[in-house]
Length: 103
Image 1 (cartoon, rainbow, N blue to C red):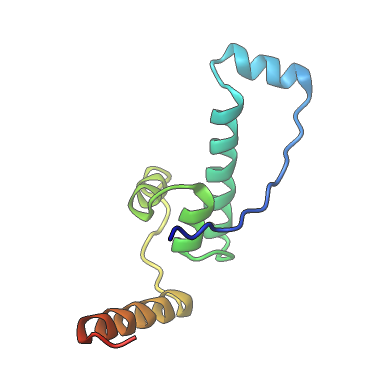
Image 2 (cartoon, rainbow, N blue to C red):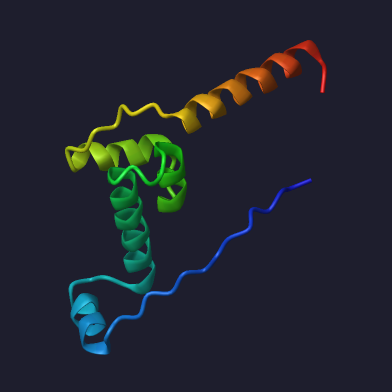
């Protein structure tokens, strides 16, 4: 059974002349959408508003790829907050129970 994650669609309006200029530079709507997601994710991560994992999720990238984006921008990657710690504890618990055959 596949689980579908709920998504919220956010809309960015762009003046037509700006979009035309971007199209002339080779950008299409999908590329601009992805770059906007990545840019927002980087900003919110940099402001400590999102954890590394949540920012990667917002960017639509695997965490390793998002870390590459941060490295390319010379941004700090090693920030281990309470949310990551709690997630790691939950993962360890899930793996331990799975290995023992308990739910």
